Amino acid sequence: MSTDNARIGETITVADAPWVGPAALIGLPLVGAALGWGLTFIVEWIVGLRWFPFQGLFELFTDLSDPLRLIVALAVGLLLGLVLALFVLHEMLSITVGRDRIVFNRGDYERELDRADITGVFVQDKRVVALGHRRQELANVEFDLDRDKLAAALRRHGYAWLTEGDPYAAEFRRWVPGADGLPQGANAVLKARQQALEKSNGGDLRELRDELADLGVVVHDKDKKQYWRLSDPA
Image (tube, rainbow, N blue to C red; front, top):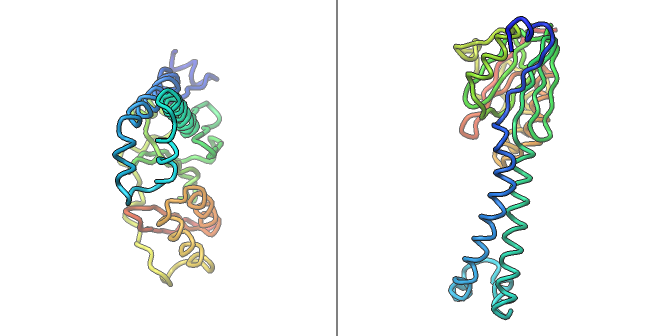
């Protein structure tokens, strides 16, 4: 693909290698089945550990005949492996870079940004961030892809790739309840978000991040702590 063609109209999708999805769909169920098979050899030992959870289920399992026990263990292992594989596929990140827009997709998170709204993109602390003209974050999503491939795709289409990371990193302050300098209502949202952060509730974290963005607050997380700065007024 030539640089000129890419800038005229072609899109570039940065994602995991094509073999990752099929490998997960095949490999994880097989691993689950293997673990289920292994369970048949240690279930009697597990039942002897009275502190071990789900003792009732393990006792029911030991009441089965040996052939049926093996069939149940393999079936349950395959099913759990398949569920895990589908979750992995659902959570895989893809970033589609085009001349006029960038689209971020990961699980239930989807963000489509017009080129005119984006001033720069960077990766820092295993997250990819797109910045807007008011120094606000237009997108912020966990990143586990090839950074060089993303940088090349962005540069090919003429977007600003911020090699030094977040240009406003020095402005972040740790949030404490009742912190001064925040817009009205932001402390309440940050308090709710702290609870979601401690529970690792990803859906609430994203939703409350967007609420803070509407209030003009940018928030970053580190070690279950929140750090904030202000964006420019609209």
